[in-house]
Length: 344
Image (cartoon, rainbow, N blue to C red):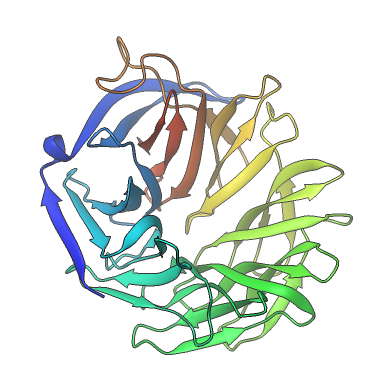
């Protein structure tokens, strides 16, 4: 399927507004971080992932984009697509995600660093989602068959697709894949309980729950050490967790969390990012260090508000990805949805 792309200068492509503000380090002294707001052509932006080199992939309006560390924005689109979900970028700047055409089901795609886009579906798919891609160009996600049963899959850089299912599950979906090909994901049991799973490089599948009594466990991100980050529901509350390669699990909540903690991304050092709601219902970003300490943050209001952006403080901050340098990307809301980078 033909694809179009355009490279734009940073200022022309987006409103990139930078400010230095403090974040609250829970239990420690305050430090400063740099925030960059991303609003492409006034349409906002939804970053999905950041790689180790600082390249960011995401979407805005009916387009995908890649942002370089210098701030250059390259946009891309697929003919006939009306919506994009740009979810992952590896260190080779290969991007993975899925898109929806008008009146049709979702299809997967991968985009190389030179802009070549390949669309695909596993055989028999009536809807394909792609959530992760590793350094070898192997992507993972899920697809629905004609009976609306969901299956997980791997797609290699050469286009070979292997489907897999957690034994006894009514649905299986891969979300993240490590350099060595280990997949983290989520399955749904026949009685509608969501469980996390890890798929070893040899294909062995192991399901898990974050704690006894958990009714839902989501495996969302895996690092190269095999540690998985995600969130789960226990006793009616949402909690973050990490699952180490030895299968030990630690659940956690930032001190200010009011029973709603969502961990989304983990880097190779073991730092985790996500967001939580306080007792007023406002969402804050958090960084959990490898030692287990928390730093709460939110995208700040700049002097007079960000130009062409929100005039007031954000209503919510929602991090989704963190690289090994500690740079975090995500979205925040304040009369609209804008992207951000938080640079330590």
